Length: 143
Image 1 (tube, rainbow, N blue to C red):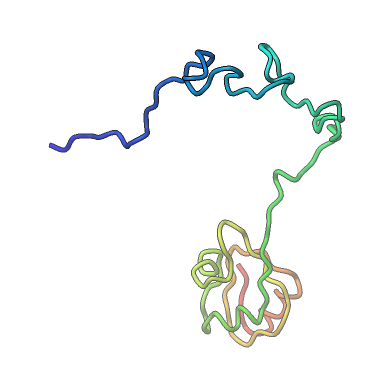
Image 2: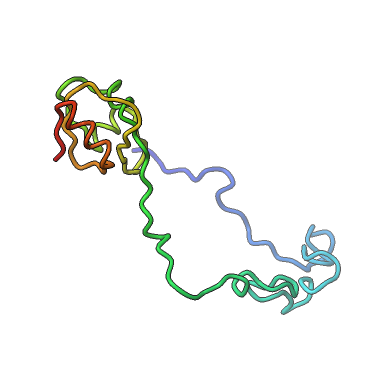
């Protein structure tokens, strides 16, 4: 049976400060020489910026922002679809991801940039009105 071994350096002894210069952390105990942070109980509160107006007071806190719920859509042109897909294939988020036209968790929107010559079936992908017209004119369908 294999023994579990701690990696080297994973545990270190607690540093005891202020026990003479021979300990390596004597005299100022690693706090530097003078100043507010070298004193016991010294230091500034969270968010303090030395008297400058702090960030949490500089930023407006009124109103509603839809930013956390914003959906990023990657634009896909018709000529990119025409180059990547064969006649009669289905265009969906999954197939767009497989063919490398979109990356990650982003959604896609098909825009009417370029021409399309193949009959494609578009399923579950946002599409502009002019792109939808061009796909239907080429014999494709939108579900």
